[in-house]
Image (tube, rainbow, N blue to C red; front, side, top):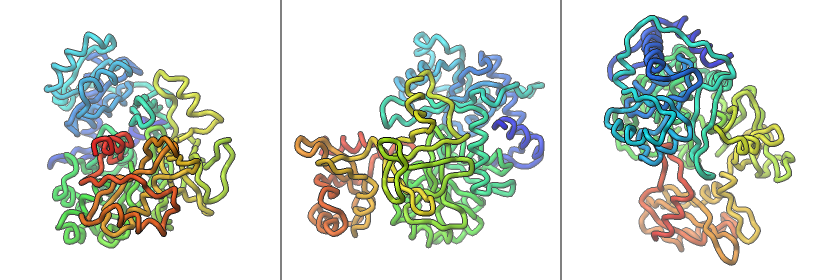
Amino acid sequence: MSVLDDLRTTFANRTARTAVEWRGRAYSYGELERLALAAGALLRERGMEPGERVAVWTADRFAFLVAHLGVLLGGGVGLPLNPKFTREEMRHFLADSGAAVVVSDPDNLPLLDELRSSLPDLRSFVTPEEVTNAPHRSAHHAATAPDDPCLILYSSGTTGRPKGVVHTSANLGASLRALRDCWRVNPDDAVLHVLPMFHIHGLSFAAQMTLLAGGRLLLEDGFHTDRTLAAAARATVVMAVPTIYYRLLDHPGFRASACELSGVRLFTCGSAPIRPEVLPVLEEILKRPIINRYGMTESHVIASLPLDGPWPWGSVGLPLAGIELEVVDATGQPLPTGEVGAVRVRGPNLFREYWRNPDATAQAFAGGWFDTGDLGSLDSNGFLTLAGRSTDLIITSGYNVYPQVVERAVNECPGVRESAVFGLPDSLSGETVAAAVVRSDPTLDEAGLLAFLKTRLVDYQRPRVFVFVDELPRNAMGKVPAAALRELVRNK
């Protein structure tokens, strides 16, 4: 069963119920379907053929959603892009994807027109206003097969140049159904959406999964502490990334406002690890657990903490239904409980291929499993705890150092707000352990940190280089790129 089958069923069964609330207006499922079908028909008129890529590159979040649904229902392949991408980033993504149509803000049209001569596949541009005001003619759902591509998302590029991740209608549907069932999202839920629309977290987990479940999407312009807290008072589900929770904790009115959130049954966190020492504070304020989960562009959500517990400290939970997960050594053999190794998965949630990159596809699926590139360990009950990316593993004097293990110890030090641990080249040991530290106590120094860590980490795990910063460098989804951390040291 495909995601399009699921959406068609929801549209047919919930015509009069509210699908999206946006800037004070409620749109029913019937209205949203008509808007999406009209948008799909417009895109076909502008050059979108079945199976072709349509880039959605706009800061208008409602138009983004309508355009994306229009591409799906119209038989195209959606390509969501960050509205803050630069000229060269856009040139790369449009050229690599072979996008036929771009939905973009009017201010971007001169740039797109300038790039057009180097993009032979690009046929036309469509503005957000045209998308949301397309004529409501007798449009129809395009005929598609479950194994047809419907979505391309570019990976974050942590291991090199971003790769296009191709999802089919079948694997997208399987992913969203498994997540819906795990989190028990239902037609009575109102899901607060303040996440970027161009990322898998905001587009698939928050938006598409809510619509697939028949719930109500509370679509906001983005995160803003006061406005988000006010909107959360009308929600039953709040999806966020660690940065959002950190900023809420910094907000002087958070504790007082939290009493208005009693209707929220589920708070989730993902896209980057939340600091485990922050969780007790948040849960005491919110009177609810923060349900951590683990996913990636290639797989959607892989694992989640169960809603009813238990919630092991630092764990990202159990695999979702239908997903197999194992932790293996360098030879591909499963490791005993508690040992750190490579995390790999298989199941109906996985993407089909890397766009125009058969070598990378074959490598990722070698042995019949998908290599996530993450390191982790399993406990005796099958709960997964991550130890970082395999590319971020620090090997110093022959010893393996896992950044998240060191970060947890550093973050426990009084006066530390948060930290990020990374490796630096070293002529003697191969690599040396470094830490970027954000202090809550400006008097804390390197000597104080090392004294604290002496009884908590073995000698080779202790950072040899510290850089104190006002905040950690983060990308759009709150992740801290290792390259940006190394740049901090170079600029020290």
